[in-house]
Amino acid sequence: FADGLEHVTDIKLEKCMYIQDECLQRLSETNNLQKSLQQLKIISCGNVTDRGILALHKLTNLEYLYLSDLPGIREKETTFRVLQQALPNLELELDLE
Image (cartoon, rainbow, N blue to C red; front, side):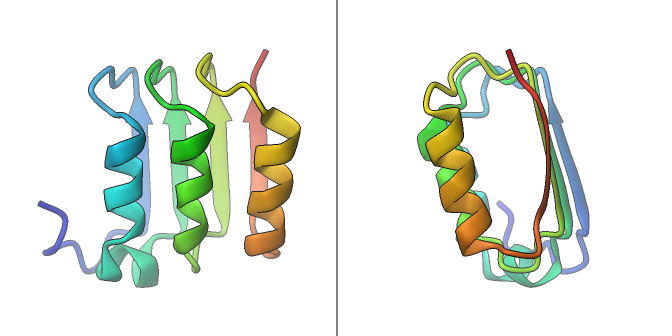
């Protein structure tokens, strides 16, 4: 579905109950998005867990990641440390309990 996305720089997923870790993994593995995506916001997607967030490390041009209201994320510190190590230029903004 995402193969044609060549010039997408910004994606916002808000209140998407159908977005799960597998979807984030597929997004992260899409070559065009790996090149173009710079900003990603994931807000109130209850089925996203640490596994889905960790998959985002493949988005090598990602500059800004905003995460808010994601109850499925349980290993916050570990997950974000791994992500920051993989993507040192990433600005990570968190609004999580």
